[in-house]
Image (cartoon, rainbow, N blue to C red; front, side, top):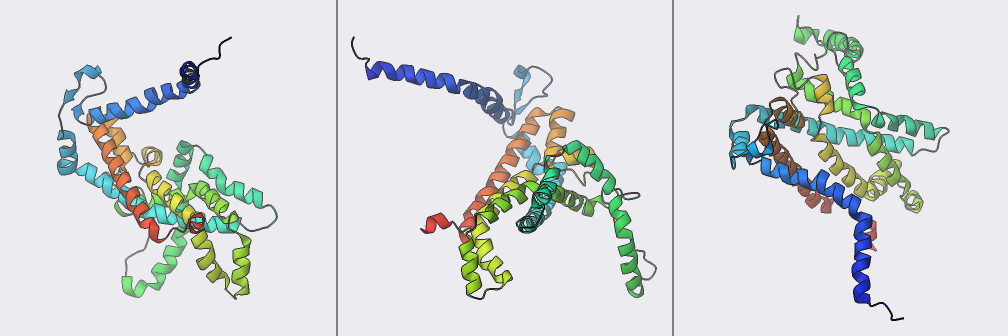
Length: 321
């Protein structure tokens, strides 16, 4: 019997491999590649999303010109989202790192405490948003009930300066939403830092104990060991969590949709919520696609900027050997 030629065997092997990966290829083509390509075409078109796709009208760069030069709500959504990112990213990472340092302790029942920190990250978004809507209620909310005694004491101490002016906690999501709306959402973000905390915890457990022992022998204090050992060894994890936090913070939607719908007066109109309104409330699919691609470019630019700066503060031990 003649041996099978490798030239005839290779096509058969390739066909079997394609057969194994065909479900993934099919899903990628239909659910990822096609929607991305279609949204890029729609970004240069006008289409309601209700009529057939053939009714789409090619408008060139008009959607982008309208966004960049004439849309005040778009600019406001950028300011609101940028304000939120400036608060939520560093604040959330600091809390997550602090929690990971606590959860890295060897105490009894540490598994329960770690689970308690992580559990809010997997809870349903809508239910949690409804709960936090009550927490930030200006009249009957839990947070203002806790802050009122503190404001009363501060007001009494500053009475010679303030006179008859009464200090009161802010009405977070209504009257004072222009200044306190994005900070309220940033405070709410601290509720879900459990995922970042677990990644920090994995990074902390991977730091060799010999480095701490050597620092102790040299007489380094706990603060100096944290600054000179923990932070440099943890810098790749900080970098990764920071990038993911920036990307996630630009995509706030569920909380804003459930709690405020962008109001009052668009003071809590986050970028993705505005994109959703254009697509499914005003049926401007082309305009919404242009918003989506601008968001992609903004996140891409910020990510590249952070990655370029990471050479100065990220320490990769494997690259030093």
